[in-house]
Length: 461
Image 1: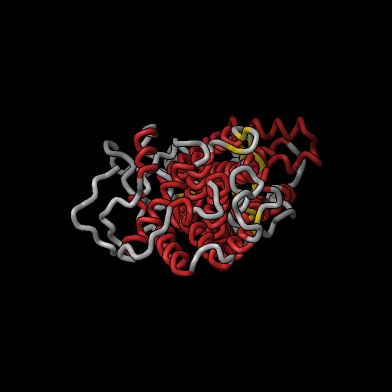
Image 2: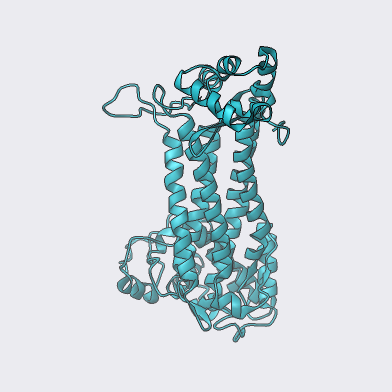
């Protein structure tokens, strides 16, 4: 255990004493696997649940008002992040998260004693942990922290990205460009239509998260050790979840089945799968942007990204797609995190999953990475994209695939001959078609007008 300073201050912003006790000290000695600690969002959830539990036990007549008020005050300081340095236990610890739960119990009990000048004494287990077990507290913290982050960070950031994409699309309904399949030239579309595809991907991710968010509202709290609710009042979970609902604005409730809620982490696995899908979508968008901005001389060079920093320490004037690259790395991490959570979810044996701290850490990280990535794409890329209209028009005019519009008149083989000739001789399709067909120039101009080839489906997008 850390050595206490000679002088101890009780200012909540600067507690210099060591607040944790012997059980936390044992965990520090036992678990030296990494330097990863439980994330801030999880500690917020842990403090919030401890506070709500104290209130519930008071309402149930199990904890006197002074002790309850003191525990609530201390727990709220934990939730607000004033004592994060008092939570040093490694993420890679006992699989139930008991070490972190005991850590919180000890810190809160110590804070009560300090702030009351030793006039209120609470026991870490008998009072702070009353009606609880690590086995129901930690799964509840996973759900609570993930629900809050998704509702308050990820969903708003995805909505912001979608709106930014839609605004950009609105500027480019008349920007007709070459489409690409297999990385090869294909039929034309508007830049607005291309962006609408990105926006629809973001909307899909948003909808999936919003539709599945309520699954996180169901908490294991009240199930205690194995799901039977031993040593807790029958109304404890109802009061705790009611208090959490009042404090967060999210509609929490006791789990439908405590045995599932404690022994399995299927909900976390499901949410992680949606986060992985979101990461795949943001990766696709980022890679499209990288390709479209490639060059400027030997790439596609259809769009220009804002110059945020020097692209090279040796090549002057180089500009790189730094934000899309950063987002791709973040998304890669999220995709890997999903595998971690999937394998962790498999580690539920009989009445308990024993990889809860890892699930908590990884799920929080994925949500926060995606939230920041969506905001970065919106504010540092999409908003300030500019279009190289000259390059787009030049490429479109020479696109041999435009000949597809003539196949109904002259057949596939003749159209292919025109396309190949146009490409080999670096001429427009119209010029070659005038030579190789009997179609008038006026009709060719009408049939090969790119604006008429972008279709009626989603044309206005």
